Length: 77
Image 1 (cartoon, rainbow, N blue to C red):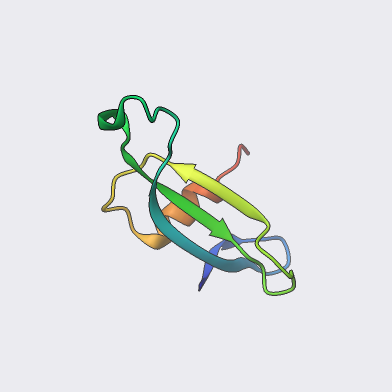
Image 2 (tube, helix red, strand yellow):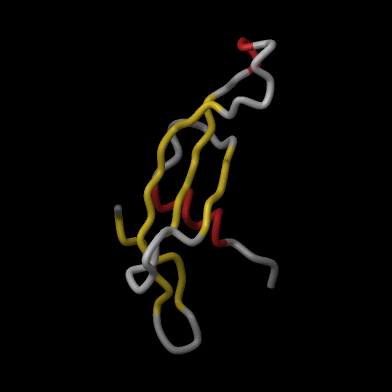
């Protein structure tokens, strides 16, 4: 688990613990060549007893940890 700060909030910086791993989602086991690895990003805040949020991303394998979190936490303004 890695603690990542993704932006400054109204009172403080927003941060949480994250883990990431490459996974192949088995949505089409009949055609295995269509399975492409994706990022699974998991958020587990320190004050929680278990992970609270999960994201799947088809972003390149070369994306950094922080940019992956930034994109997951991006919201419309």
